[in-house]
Length: 333
Image (cartoon, rainbow, N blue to C red; front, side, top):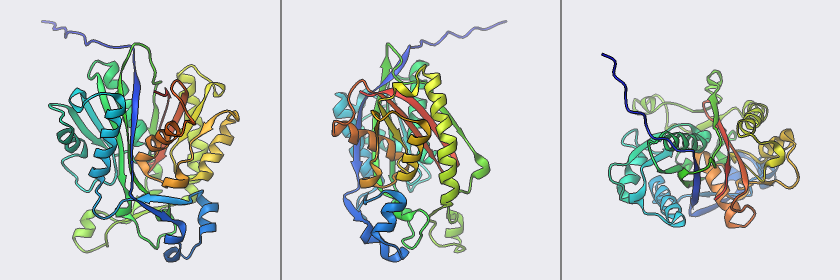
């Protein structure tokens, strides 16, 4: 006997309704952290473009940041938590292996029987989440999705490390994604380069820490390798995302790359030959590198400051530990 399953309903596309944001409550300047790494404000600015970064106080958890950003996004979208069908959180710094931060948010936001899960895609995580939300919605699996990037990276910093620690900040950024009669989010171009898995890494495992073989694990990176890979590899990913969306560089209004380093941002813009009219996110100067939270935080800032507006064509690209990458074109709310 042949059994045929009932086909699922599908929709034409998805769109972002609104963004929400939460940044660490502390402003940490270059002078505040230069001593332990034997550096200076001038050196940090020249190497990274960072003037200061936002970090959270000891009594402010990553869950606190995530909840604030989620509530902000819901309020701006004009909906209640009970209207969500799914919550997707990207994070590498939630201190519990299980249960997920997404499930915690579901309870706090009053979301009964909602799909809730975390993903670990580091600095590409928000774009991974947008890609998954878009697929869920277009397949009929959900109608409205909260996509979150949330990090408290200050919990994993060695103050004496000169490779990455002085870059890092804390924050959470969220987007509400919902069904749309027309596609407002283009295809996601994503993947990984596992041969360079250790290029951005932790200094040890939690098992090693538990057993006394290693101190508390903190983050490290091979900066030169990351810079070359980020610039040359992800520029091609952006071109592919534009091509899949049926657009060209000339159609871009806003460019929001992961806020890893201002030099990477500038070099990507150069490689893509972006028109001078394109607004480029540079939130790293005041917020620092917040990994999965950096793209929604940067987009939120551009919209709040009026540098980007509803209807703008935005290209976003995330890249980071793994090495993983993801990018897509979307229309801003």
